Amino acid sequence: MTAIDSLDLQVPEGAICALVGPNGAGKTTTLKVLMNILPATHGRAEILGVQSTHLSPRTFAQIGYFSENQDLPDWMTLKYFLAYLKPFYPNWDDARAEELLHQFDLPSNTKLANLSRGMRAKAALTSSLAYRPRLLVLDEPFSGLDALVRDELTGALLESADGATVLISSHDLSEIESFASHVCYIEHGRLRFSEEMGSLTRRFRAIEITLPHQPSLPVSTPATWLGIETSAGVVRFVETDYERARTHAAVHRLFGDVEVSVNPMSLREIFVTLATAGKKAA
Amino acid sequence: MVPWRVTFRPGVSLCEQVVYSAKKAVISGQMRPGDSFPSVRSLSKELKINPNTAHKVIAQLVNEGLLEVRPGIGTVVAELPRSRASERISLVGNEIEQLVVEAKKLGMGLDDVLDAVSDHWERLGGEGGKFLRRRS
Image (cartoon, rainbow over all chains, first blue to last red; front, side, top):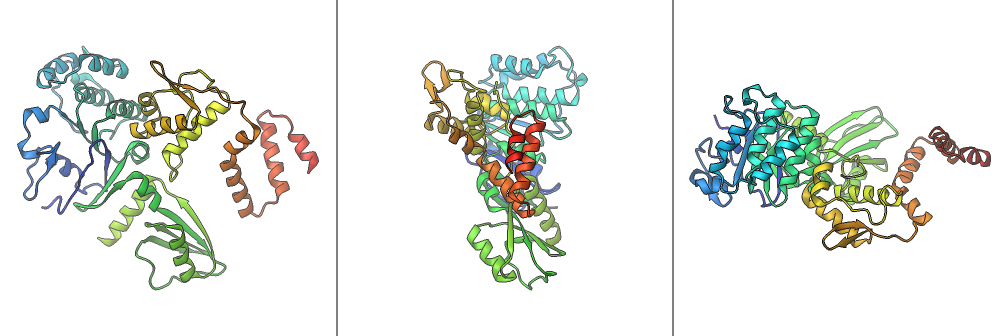
């Protein structure tokens, strides 16, 4: 089975890049190939300028990886776990670890097995942030966690993100929208687009046209229009390449002199539009 | 601590929304001249925004003269000329425009809108709503 195919993706240094796509799109596989947890049958992945199959311990010590299903050594206490990791990371910062433990309100003498799901996530993130990684790879870090824990994790992450590069896959789109600088949309193992958050939210608009009569859909509509729906007196669609003059001209050409209402969309709405269109096309 | 909150709206530049909310906090007196302004780090951490966005917010506020950089201390709220009525009005300009657009869409008249505004005004404990109504 091919999980990812022709996936050509570059994450600029210093970006907080959100890897977004339906379940089974290939996000986790992509991250695992990057981290050399899975071998790629074709192509290559580079990380911090080094091919990921040739990562040296020195490079590896600058990368933080955290996934939702991460195994932790359950028999260790958190304190023991951090002490165990420390020698592997030349940049380990005790003060930062201490600060995170305090901020997260983590009990350092409890065995990892006895921590709640939220606390395990915080413990895992602490163990990655304590060495101030240059690159953080996070696979669904928020899944199954309550809103408060998600908030705390995001806060700690952003505090550490200044200057670091973050690659994060997540379905918590309303959260990611406020802090990701770039969005990569993956579907069926392919990269559909990769662009800056600002340019993405600028080009998507929900359009609603009010007609004086029952609408009849024109035979062909611009390829950039998705999810066209009609109901009594109204046509709705999503313009994926919005530019005021161009979009209005296309509407007027097809529907005559009608009232057009243009509304910005959240990342979540954009995702639902793309995922629905992708399902129809498949 | 960041002494104000922002409810983010989609499709509008995040930087502008934060700048706007900070201006509101300064002009409404929630933050006073000389108060220290949150750092990039705490803006980013508490509002959950990208550190680069937080950098831009502070740069823009410094640029517009709302913040001053004090070496060794950080950024503080600048001494402002008494805020003018026109400035306060321009701060709610967006909301007023939205209200007018929605009202026109629904075919409301100016009187209906003023009535509705004065109702809300009174409900929130403001005075002067009756004056508005009498006039209409």
